[in-house]
Image 1 (cartoon, rainbow, N blue to C red):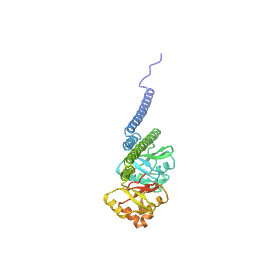
Image 2: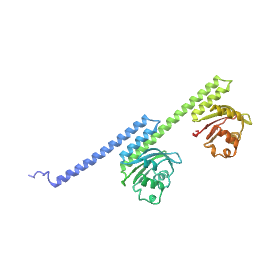
Image 3: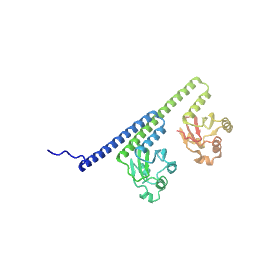
Length: 345
């Protein structure tokens, strides 16, 4: 008869210790998976509850990413086709200062530069000792010396190969991110793209409904005032100002030689001063209209040669401080709207 195994024997103790370690590892993996699933579920709920307000979505997303990926600070950036603009940030004031404002990649070898070049995931594990840091790149120096970053993970936000932005998270220790953490940030990036697309579609739908409503209201005014154009022009200008987020709007009629001010929405003294100046010829800013163009848009009139060189044009624009100027045109009338700060669509 074989003797019973001694529970105090070295072999059994070693086997038991290994089983305990394996159980602890599997439990940790399970807890991490549950935490990831809970985070994604919570984010989906926030997206559904804030379909047109991305701020709480991005802030919650960034908080979850930093916690689950064991990171110290990070940010989410939107790409407008030219520059990256920070739209969510977590970290100290030094971190915020180091990543403030709109940014273009200072080098094709930065995380941003590589994302812009087409990469979807950039994993940088030795920020303070790589060639970019030694070369004195200002962004890398600021990221390492001011913010204290040592490891970075950058993931692109793309929709049908179009770059919408990026996620960037950082650690203050030289510790690579795990495959599960990289996959999690990619999942968050995909959720951010969904949130952006939902907000865009909602905005477009709302704008389309507002435009249809405005058109119907203007048609109603036309039908109710067939022989009086004044209320029609006023209604048109009011709707144009609202939908185009403009500060002022005017409508001029063209007699083949001169443009006459038919209606205007602005401060009374500005309207009075423009009426005192009388009609204007179709030159300067109006030249595209005279050539037959139907749409003109000047994001900043101060950059135009006609503004600098023609005192009459400059006087008319400076009366009411116009900065952005544009119009849609028909054959015999020209309607324009201006804004101090907002570029019209």
